[in-house]
Amino acid sequence: MGRGKVVLQRIENKISRQVTFAKRRNGLLKKAYELSILCDAEVALVLFSHAGRLYQFSSSSNMLKTLERYQRYIYASQDAAAPTSDEMQNNYQEYVNLKAHVEILQQSQRNLLGEDLAPLATNELEQLESQVVRTLKQIRSRKTQVLLDELCDLKRKEQMLQDANRVLKRKLDEIDVEAAPPQPPWNGNCSNGGGGGGGVFSSEPPQPEHFFQALGLHAVDVNQPPAPPPGGYPPEWMA
Figure (cartoon, rainbow, N blue to C red):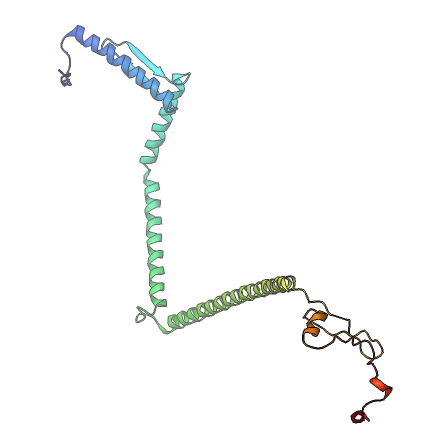
């Protein structure tokens, strides 16, 4: 069976009351010690038994220091909680002044928005107009400055992008030059007239001699002069 609920009332039996006091006292002192260790708290416990015997616990080395600290805190709280009549009068006067100032500011704000203008006189309207004009000038000046700052930032970003574009274009040109195919060689065997160095490009390999023989032709060396016809005289059609 579980433990029954304890009724909170005075124990009439003296022996049972003393036993309960001893158990609960030890438990309370133990809890105070654990609280001071676990939570790094300054704990002071004062306990008097029914017979007038004192039991105490202090987490600090001196119980009196903790009690003095407690008294200072209590007295300071009482002084702060119970202000004098002069302080109350000063606080009330300050409250009245602040309330009046807030009302004046709210009325001025409504006038600047074009509200509640009927009670204003001519000079008050002129002052309000001058104030609005000054405010408008300040707003326009600030707007112009903000636009100029943004324009400067955009120009700086544009210059940075142009520089980056030029760098990228230079790198692309270098890559194109490196990736270009090499030029084919030139055949300089043919010469012009007096043996000049100008060659003629030929992409086909030279034909062998048996190729011309199969066609009924003879390979002729273009560098040799033509042979004279039989008889030493040119034919009539060449005369």
